[in-house]
Image 1 (cartoon, protein in one colour):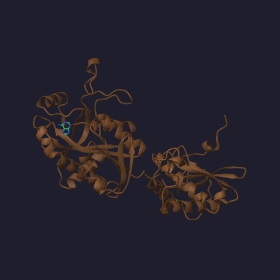
Image 2 (image 1 turned 135 degrees about the vertical axis):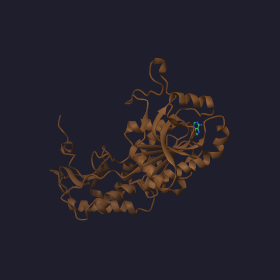
Image 3 (image 1 turned 45 degrees about the vertical axis):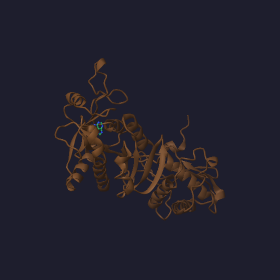
Image 4 (image 1 turned 90 degrees about the horizontal axis):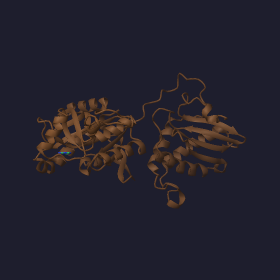
Length: 398
Ligand code: ADE
């Protein structure tokens, strides 16, 4: 089997830039590498698709548009291929790429080809995402054309891949739990995936996607999956309210999860301990939230004089509203500080995707006979308390 040319290039040496990938007769294939290969920072499908529509249209409308053969994304999600006739010298192609990127960034009209009859997946297009990617690539391309040869040796001067910029995914079970965040967002783009409305924009200077998951573990797991694998979030925060299990917690107190357990996961009849998660890469009872995010949250809380403690969060598809239920949870998990219905599901998905997560709760009730009174009384204030500390954590993030 012949190895195709692009597999022979050492991808460990490639940095973002424009390269000549191959020459076939009078056709030159350019590698427009927008991201570092294998650095954990990949374009999502929406971004690739949107850049394809905008860039392809604008370059084909340039003075040398009839010399363009093809433009499209690489399957590895780190760049695009542009095929041009060799009548346009490479240095001019370099300038043309920069001009076209700028034209995408400055475009004021509609997304091109965004009607159902124009495209096989017309809902999956977003001008903002195209502009963001093109701006990012434009900013790192030197004005003067480079030689466009792939690096053959590690270049001491080549920049180290920067950590991918933070993209926070924030989810909550109920809309009330997000009220403290959504109005503060700017440049908001909305899209619905699997029935979940996701709003992507800027919050306190950081990129965030915010989604209301619905109540319970399945909803939480689905929403977390959408945020990570469709929207490209690389940090997840689950904010909301909880019932107090620990006797020294009262309404509005804040708890950040250090450990989490799904206490309704019960295969004890076949010999496992209660809460044991098995299969799909996990064989354990407890999940954890990310220690760096937790430390950052604790220091934000301390700086703002907001009491917040670390503790175990017990999750199940059950609203706890009786002393008996509460005692049962405490008997099985004596360290559990609060109970709620999503946190450990979010943590499970994040663990499997290797995405850091933080689960934050404010107490809305004491998970006993008084819950039916306390929950409606404190829900909104507790939700706002948790959301406010979440916003502060995002503001302080690097
Ligand atoms: N969320 C808020 N209060 C709760 C409770 N008592 N049980 C489960 N989830 C909750």
